[in-house]
Length: 186
Image 1: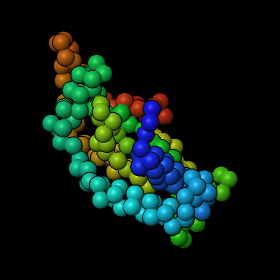
Image 2: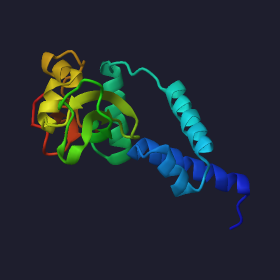
Image 3: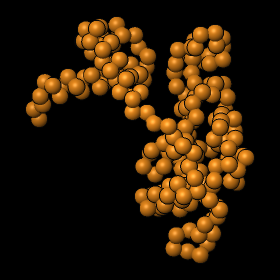
Image 4: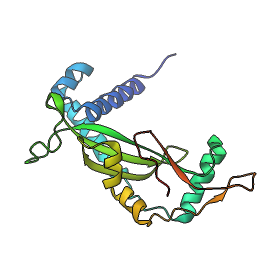
């Protein structure tokens, strides 16, 4: 397959900025890795970050109808009834914030922060919580997150038990997560 030079450059730029955002490599290292001048590398990263920043949206807390739409999406796409979302946490490598001491310190001199997210059937974010320290377990992170606290207080507008599609059986709604999250009736 023949591709244009412009397409090859664009692919290279996408790889470069994603490598930078994913790893935090120095610009000089990326320039060497991708064989691109430092000033070009810096410009690509700046433009990419501006594009990401300008496309960010504020997520609002789902209401009862949004939760029901999410559950319907899981049923239609994955034949998984009453699922309100898939939840998991990701440990993200970062530079330590000024004056943070050992708050975000992990072994081998790295610093990490935890991103906790709930997604719908199409992998779109429904709820996101960023900022927990890495030394907490996933269940503690969830319990202490705004999401977990709202769930505990009953302010997430979770629908009451509903009938499983095609049956007369009523079932509680649930979030699908790893075994690290504590089982909890919502």
